[in-house]
Amino acid sequence: MIEVVQDEETGHFRVVTFRGETLGLTTTRAAANDLAELMLEAWEEAIGAAAARARMKHGAAVIEPR
Image 1 (cartoon, rainbow, N blue to C red):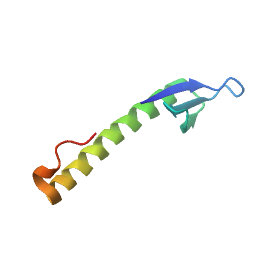
Image 2: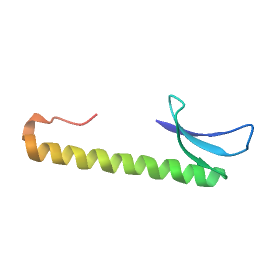
Image 3: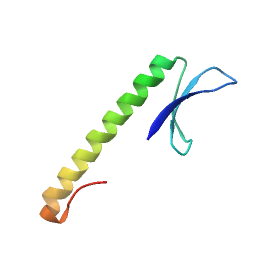
């Protein structure tokens, strides 16, 4: 879903989507890797919370989030 790429001009590291949209910019690969990992964790938590809220409102009508 997201990956870390190095900018050839600046040497900085970008956390990007599969479409190439920049989600974050860092000066080290370690920071970029951590940022990417934490963004994925946050995404999973947000999806889980949204699914739980939808299930509370709509019950079994919500089969599973995608």
